Length: 178
Image (cartoon, rainbow, N blue to C red; front, side, top):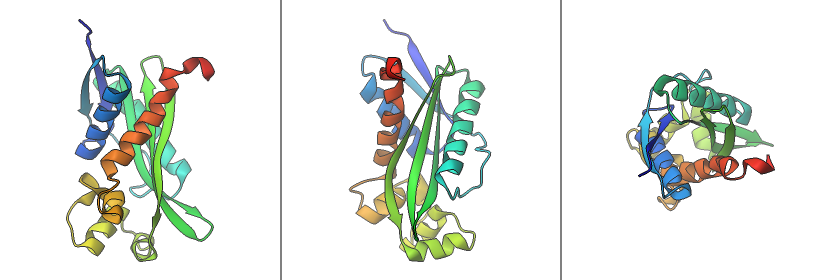
């Protein structure tokens, strides 16, 4: 019987933990996974404002998570915003690190962040809090998130992050190509 593999997620956010669990189960369905969240600092601002800042945060979370839980894999997920020309886009970056220090990276889809939300973000509010205010909901970053709110849950934060984790795991399926 296969041993249980431990995955440390650098967050206690249930959406991120569930996204990681689903992704590992899709990629390696024959294995048993123990996916645990651990609170770690990202080392970046609460609202990353570039892809590079988000990638740095995801990398830091993955490294700190694998070390904290002595896991087989560490996963960092960091949502952020990126300006492209005059428009802003929401995107989650994912970094997966194994015990050997090998690293895979992927991202969620990108979604246009409306002007009204960005006005609040530019005043210092996190995108999740701006979503809560505009949509009159509570703590949506731990449920449907920006993606779910904007698509009537056709795409949720969980499914978007799951796909980003799968993209990051592709490295481990084809290490010989890297």
